[in-house]
Length: 327
Image (spheres, one colour):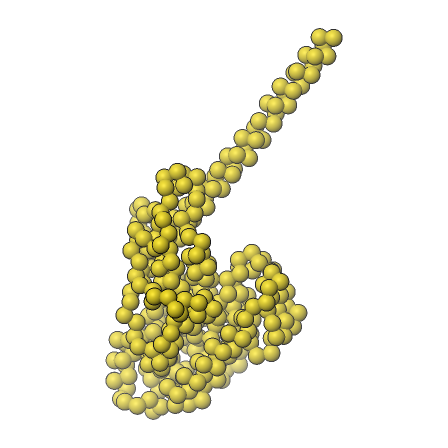
């Protein structure tokens, strides 16, 4: 979501949005289940490499760890901020299944769904792997969708949700429905930036592999593989990562994971704003209800038309036969 967050850089920082501001109809009954998120265990730091004692580092990681940050936090915050300006649907609009999602909030909503899906995939990596989500970087509004640290090395994953679209991949460019994108350039920049920041924070050279994860594409045509960026379907991610050769020892993995979990490693102060993930869940549920209602209306209309055809045919047949017999 690198491009979207850059566009929002000049806007007011995202704040927690109350449920009433989303335009979503409150969900009755128990709250919807949360998206599965990989539980983070703060790794014990490897000896050396970081100033301070091990106890000091563990305390810092526990109190300010990015490891507990939920997937898509940044885009959800922006989605709710934009959605808060949208008027609530009227009773008539809800009856006919008009979506409560505002047009300006839709790109953020779609982006959040993509990041949540990739996070669900990454949660199956297994022991020895650490995953950070929605990592804020620097003093601006940019973030990294996912940072993966494991035996195969360090990876930055940029999620792109191209629902129902055709993705064409070449050695130096990616087209979506024929339109040129900056996917490869942005992914390479994120990896290079991550390498510099983690190398300084960990006091060791950290190579980072950039990855673009495509979610929801109707078709993906790979003419040539990009030279320096891995571009994959989201369902290919876990297998691709696990098949990579081992480049880091368990101690190095733990050391890098402990460093990466600290906001200071990313030149960022700890986040103080609270993102209302429950409000996003309610918005998602309201959008789903509206979609199902629209489908119900479509089915009803089609059924009514189909049912009316025999009646109309019989009426026409009776009229024709009556006219013929009257002669």
